[in-house]
Length: 143
Image (cartoon, rainbow, N blue to C red):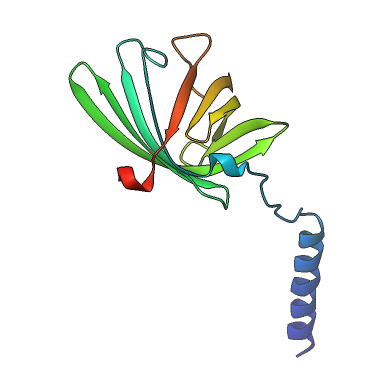
Protein backbone atom coordinates (compact mmCIF):
# COMPACT_ATOMS: atom_id res chain seq x y z
CA UNK A 1 0.00 0.00 0.00
CA UNK A 2 2.91 2.38 0.82
CA UNK A 3 4.34 1.84 -2.68
CA UNK A 4 1.03 2.82 -4.32
CA UNK A 5 0.74 5.99 -2.19
CA UNK A 6 4.40 6.88 -2.84
CA UNK A 7 4.02 6.34 -6.58
CA UNK A 8 0.82 8.42 -6.65
CA UNK A 9 2.47 11.26 -4.73
CA UNK A 10 5.52 11.19 -7.02
CA UNK A 11 3.28 11.38 -10.08
CA UNK A 12 1.25 14.24 -8.59
CA UNK A 13 4.36 16.25 -7.62
CA UNK A 14 5.92 15.51 -11.00
CA UNK A 15 2.84 16.84 -12.77
CA UNK A 16 2.79 20.00 -10.63
CA UNK A 17 6.52 20.57 -11.19
CA UNK A 18 6.15 20.09 -14.97
CA UNK A 19 3.27 22.58 -15.12
CA UNK A 20 5.27 25.27 -13.29
CA UNK A 21 7.82 25.29 -16.09
CA UNK A 22 5.22 25.74 -18.81
CA UNK A 23 3.75 29.07 -19.76
CA UNK A 24 -0.01 29.27 -19.85
CA UNK A 25 -1.39 29.66 -23.36
CA UNK A 26 -2.16 33.26 -24.14
CA UNK A 27 -4.97 34.57 -26.27
CA UNK A 28 -3.69 35.95 -29.54
CA UNK A 29 -4.09 39.63 -30.26
CA UNK A 30 -6.22 40.06 -33.36
CA UNK A 31 -7.40 42.98 -35.47
CA UNK A 32 -11.19 42.72 -35.77
CA UNK A 33 -11.01 44.47 -39.16
CA UNK A 34 -9.42 41.26 -40.55
CA UNK A 35 -12.08 38.87 -39.21
CA UNK A 36 -14.45 37.39 -41.77
CA UNK A 37 -14.49 35.69 -45.15
CA UNK A 38 -11.96 37.04 -47.69
CA UNK A 39 -10.83 36.25 -51.22
CA UNK A 40 -7.70 37.10 -53.15
CA UNK A 41 -5.45 36.14 -56.02
CA UNK A 42 -1.98 36.58 -57.43
CA UNK A 43 -0.18 35.56 -60.60
CA UNK A 44 3.52 34.90 -61.23
CA UNK A 45 4.53 36.08 -57.75
CA UNK A 46 5.12 32.76 -56.04
CA UNK A 47 5.93 30.73 -59.16
CA UNK A 48 6.23 32.17 -62.67
CA UNK A 49 3.37 30.81 -64.78
CA UNK A 50 1.17 29.97 -61.78
CA UNK A 51 -2.01 31.76 -60.79
CA UNK A 52 -3.25 31.31 -57.23
CA UNK A 53 -6.70 32.14 -55.95
CA UNK A 54 -7.92 31.69 -52.41
CA UNK A 55 -10.75 32.08 -49.98
CA UNK A 56 -9.78 32.57 -46.35
CA UNK A 57 -11.92 32.64 -43.27
CA UNK A 58 -10.22 34.43 -40.39
CA UNK A 59 -12.14 33.83 -37.19
CA UNK A 60 -12.31 36.05 -34.11
CA UNK A 61 -10.71 33.26 -32.04
CA UNK A 62 -7.49 33.60 -34.08
CA UNK A 63 -7.92 30.49 -36.23
CA UNK A 64 -8.20 30.39 -40.00
CA UNK A 65 -9.11 28.10 -42.86
CA UNK A 66 -7.63 28.79 -46.28
CA UNK A 67 -8.67 27.17 -49.57
CA UNK A 68 -6.08 27.64 -52.33
CA UNK A 69 -6.67 26.95 -56.00
CA UNK A 70 -3.48 26.89 -58.09
CA UNK A 71 -3.61 26.96 -61.90
CA UNK A 72 -0.48 26.18 -63.91
CA UNK A 73 -0.03 24.64 -67.37
CA UNK A 74 -3.78 23.83 -67.58
CA UNK A 75 -3.55 21.88 -64.30
CA UNK A 76 -5.75 22.85 -61.36
CA UNK A 77 -4.89 21.87 -57.79
CA UNK A 78 -6.73 22.69 -54.58
CA UNK A 79 -5.31 22.68 -51.07
CA UNK A 80 -7.03 23.36 -47.76
CA UNK A 81 -4.90 24.75 -44.95
CA UNK A 82 -5.76 25.50 -41.37
CA UNK A 83 -3.85 27.56 -38.89
CA UNK A 84 -3.67 30.39 -36.42
CA UNK A 85 -3.31 34.11 -37.01
CA UNK A 86 -2.45 37.05 -34.78
CA UNK A 87 -1.10 40.58 -34.75
CA UNK A 88 2.29 41.18 -33.17
CA UNK A 89 4.15 44.51 -33.29
CA UNK A 90 1.58 45.72 -35.83
CA UNK A 91 2.31 42.82 -38.22
CA UNK A 92 0.08 39.98 -39.37
CA UNK A 93 1.35 36.48 -38.46
CA UNK A 94 -0.04 33.37 -40.14
CA UNK A 95 0.96 29.99 -38.67
CA UNK A 96 0.16 27.08 -41.01
CA UNK A 97 -0.56 23.91 -39.03
CA UNK A 98 0.37 21.57 -41.91
CA UNK A 99 3.92 22.93 -42.25
CA UNK A 100 4.40 24.41 -38.78
CA UNK A 101 5.79 27.54 -40.45
CA UNK A 102 4.71 31.14 -39.97
CA UNK A 103 4.43 33.82 -42.67
CA UNK A 104 4.68 37.46 -41.55
CA UNK A 105 3.17 40.45 -43.38
CA UNK A 106 2.82 44.15 -42.93
CA UNK A 107 -0.73 45.15 -43.78
CA UNK A 108 -2.84 48.18 -44.57
CA UNK A 109 -6.61 48.31 -44.21
CA UNK A 110 -7.55 50.23 -47.37
CA UNK A 111 -11.26 50.27 -46.50
CA UNK A 112 -13.63 47.86 -44.69
CA UNK A 113 -13.63 45.56 -47.74
CA UNK A 114 -9.94 45.60 -48.80
CA UNK A 115 -6.68 44.84 -47.02
CA UNK A 116 -3.25 45.01 -48.67
CA UNK A 117 -0.60 42.58 -47.42
CA UNK A 118 3.15 42.93 -48.06
CA UNK A 119 5.38 39.99 -47.26
CA UNK A 120 8.03 40.46 -44.61
CA UNK A 121 8.93 36.76 -44.04
CA UNK A 122 7.76 33.78 -46.08
CA UNK A 123 8.21 30.08 -45.37
CA UNK A 124 8.38 29.46 -49.15
CA UNK A 125 10.69 31.00 -51.72
CA UNK A 126 8.94 33.47 -54.00
CA UNK A 127 9.58 34.34 -57.63
CA UNK A 128 9.41 38.05 -56.75
CA UNK A 129 11.31 40.02 -54.12
CA UNK A 130 8.26 41.94 -52.88
CA UNK A 131 5.33 39.53 -52.61
CA UNK A 132 2.08 41.43 -52.05
CA UNK A 133 -1.64 41.00 -52.59
CA UNK A 134 -5.02 42.48 -51.70
CA UNK A 135 -7.72 40.53 -49.89
CA UNK A 136 -11.33 41.50 -50.64
CA UNK A 137 -14.05 40.84 -48.08
CA UNK A 138 -16.82 38.56 -49.28
CA UNK A 139 -20.20 39.92 -48.25
CA UNK A 140 -22.83 37.45 -47.11
CA UNK A 141 -24.89 38.59 -50.11
CA UNK A 142 -22.08 37.34 -52.45
CA UNK A 143 -22.24 33.75 -51.18
